[in-house]
Length: 279
Image (tube, rainbow, N blue to C red; front, side, top):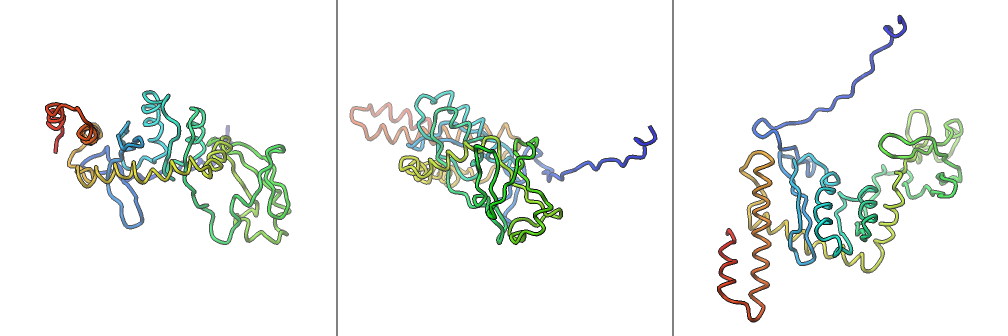
């Protein structure tokens, strides 16, 4: 009992969250080092014809990978049998999203993402993974054996720190205090590797090239023509209603333009559609 009382209290990790005084449901959005402000995000999906298929509104401090699943489930439940490939931005590139798309029988089209390793150190792709023995091979032909799996779903591979001190590549390998190299691998890393292989396929590559002409065009039109760059509303519910009306308006405009070009469409029907558009 005495020993337990003498034990030092564990440090509780705390995280400071910047909160708005006027709209607590908004979140601090960091675009770069200079630009940061309270905002809302609209995670949006569209088809090849620029029609918005679904979206999910969230506060500005929610990462893209978190808002992906609500949008994807909505779109897949309605158009799952018609989807062939899904193009996503670099913010959505991770093992969990790649597994979700592949398990649905759809081709993931993901961009190339530069390694986040510090300059002067070995990149992760320079450590060869041996799937049969479940280990990593160090550039110096040493083996990093599996150690454990952490709570975040990453498998940890380590090398004996006693042998690392005499290695000639220690300055390019790690700068940890215990001089031990640690390589992590997600349990669904194979799905991300499969998406990386598909990136070089001609069809998958063409799908990603269409992204700048489809979803990026949707965002530009919404911001420049429909006032979605800023909002005068407070609370997530009100912002979601405004975004719903904006995307509905944009879809109606595209529908009216397509019907206008077709022959045999009644002029009164076109006028009725145009009356439903809020400009």
